[in-house]
Amino acid sequence: MDSPSARNLPPEPHSVEETGLNLGFLADLVIKTMYTRGLLRGHEIAESVNLPFANVVDKVLEYLRREHLTEVRGSSGFGESSYQYVISDEGRARARELMEQNQYVGPAPVRLEAYTKMVQSQSLAEQTVTRSALKRMLAHLVLNTSVINQLGPAINSGKSIFLFGEPGNGKTSIAEAIGSLLPGAILVPYAVSVDGHTIRVFDAMHHHVISEETRGDAATPAISQGQRYDRRWVLIRRPLIAVGGELTLENLDLVFDPTKKYYEAPYQLKANGGVFLLDDFGRQQVRPHELLNRWIVPLERRVDYLTLVTGHKIDVPFDALIIFSTNLNPKELVDEAFLRRIRYKIHVADPTWEEFREIFMRESAKRSIPYSEASLRYIVMEYYVKLKRRPRAVHPRDILDELIDIARFSGIPPTLSKELVDLACQSYFLKG
Image 1 (cartoon, rainbow, N blue to C red):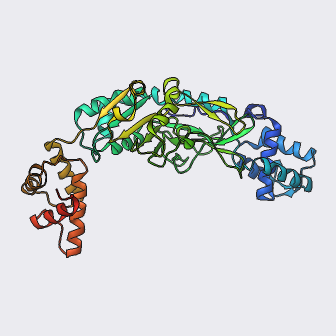
Image 2 (cartoon, rainbow, N blue to C red):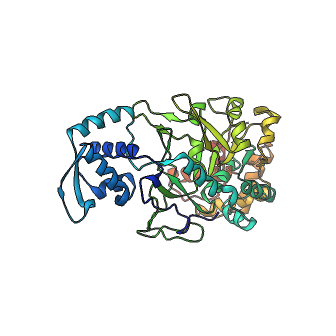
């Protein structure tokens, strides 16, 4: 599927029934909104819950007035949307009861069924990354052709990738590049409703909104100003969510806030339609086998099972490109059965000397340090060949950064002089 456009954006609901939520649920959300914000005009309430005033919010307010939970306190313009609404004493008491049960206030959620259908319709597996596009995507990295040849089919599969190899050779950079440059945009809901429970999905930290003012293109078309669609959905770039050693099994299930009484979606749910990177895999607080056993079924079936506080399990889509990145031996981390489920195992090897030279030249240019072939030969002979040290892709960047620090301290311009090179390498590498 292409990125959302005018013809496939979710239509604006024209009735309470079309929201997928019942009148009671919406009334509870509106009364909590008024309780927390005070005097509001009709259109302000509609904007807060991201639903149209006509035929939806006006029906909710009409119901609340009949139940003596709200009152009209004048008007600031023409039409019911400009009426000023205030919560009554009865409404305040009702709102306090509701806040003890669930403190969620904000855009109205969508039904889980609608979310599942949307995830399936904009699956990453439906996108195709060509060789030329991938090379452009990774142009800032110096990579062996064999790595690119393996990455392309792996990304197009939309399934799972195991990047392994020595530290400092760009595994994380590769994963981040994939995540940040995936084609297209997707829609995510602010929240999802299931069995009366609310799960917050949209996360401003991980979801980068494509604003209405953003000029669109074929890959990420902007939503035109004033365009009518279901505002409970927000257009974002395909997400990249990366976690490292802090990951626990609890982070992979619904996170229930005992105070606010609603849920936060786990990492993999927020990553749907994009990339979920498990960096430094094998160094998490949870053992690799436990973590992988948790995902055997989701990786196979593209469905995850999350648990509500009631003990009830719900099925949610599992549609992110999962990337495991590790500098440990995969065979020592997981068994053969699990390795079989991770379709693509890609070794990111040490750079060749020619690749090392290219990286060094690029990093020198970035820092405006005049490149010297003789200086590089000296570095290679003295600090690699003589000591039988293997090159890493990250070494040129780190050595040059240290060289700049030393030059600044000494009050001299950074150059690849023997003196500065020796000081930088001697402070960077462990002796012996």
